[in-house]
Length: 295
Image (cartoon, rainbow, N blue to C red):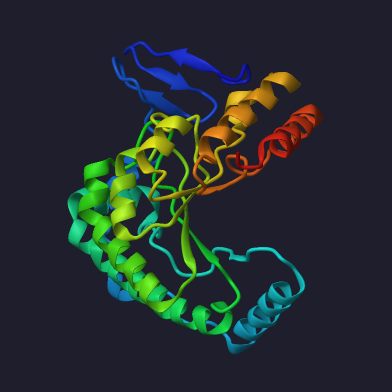
């Protein structure tokens, strides 16, 4: 804990986190966040009839996107990837706490939201394909499904509520465009990678190898024939305080595992942090230069 935080044990055995005014009840492991009790007293189910996600793009936006993609396609030898553009399935009606209530107490209401989001996304994908599909190889979508332990809402809850909509979205995606699907999902999601592959996923990013059950060798052995791994080469969470040689070996080992047989896009886990030491950057690129070729 930061030294600036202050805690005080109360007469009833609870612990007061004085900085925020939150209380950990006696014999509990978690603090009740201020306002949570009032939130649940006042919570009203949101209405999916009031949810109208965007399902189109302005002509000017599509035109500018097409011109840029065409220029890059004709003037460079790079593979082109389109950033997060479509409506996705990570909308949380009622805010994060309200969304968690819906998942458990009214999953059918949550599914009504996902149905509308999925329909909107598929319409947008068709428009994007008309604009840039002939130039772009990959399109990104995001949903941080995992935390450091596992799937945040639990694998079974994800399968029950989300999987049918990812299946519809990804299969519809492949029907509408040849652009590959790259999903950004942090954390540990190995427990549902088989499900995502079944849904039609092509590429996984950022491959958070510091999370539970996300070791590069396991991922490559189990899923390497079905997925491209985009990331996983340098994990800043694992490399804090390490020297040049340690970072070099870290990147070298991960790269040699993930590139085996193809199906890898070299990249760090998440963005490279602003406080990344200079020798880490040198080691990162040196390991890539020395090990990028296939044997």
